[in-house]
Length: 197
Image (cartoon, rainbow, N blue to C red; front, side, top):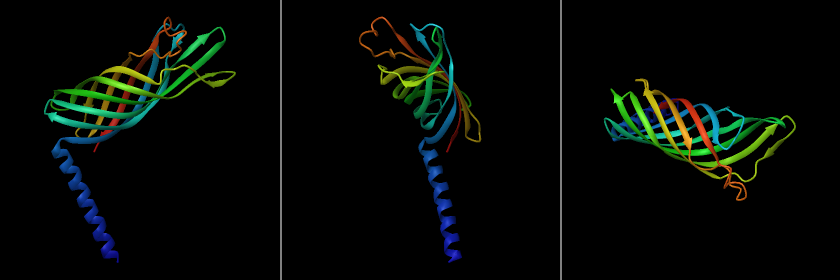
């Protein structure tokens, strides 16, 4: 019985290693990533400051040739901003599921890459937290479009680092009474670490 279990473990390990190798040979890498968000908004908002949060999720790198890849991602991303008003300090927490689609241009020996592409974000939660209350924010756009630009660096150990700037192009305010003259959009810096399998 012990020999059978040991044989099955060895067989599974060999098959897993072979599957990962063949996937790399096909030009597809699967990975995970996470890191720090330094988020804010720009537009018709006064006295706003950054909100720090996290992002985490999955990605696939589809290798087209030695110098170019396409990288779709699926991430949780904590965004928003802080605000100082006559009523006191508040923190606006906007949580999204984002789907970036990045084009990667390798600049040096397949390790340093320039990354650019669009993303769509789906609002999961929008809350305002003050010293006195914590409530849901009404009239927020549920879909947020943006553009990304960044750099990536991959080590030989398959660990990679990324720095990216996301500029939102959707007005967050979806209130029909105010959105015509109150426009503000997401802006987010992401610093990530990840691993490609």
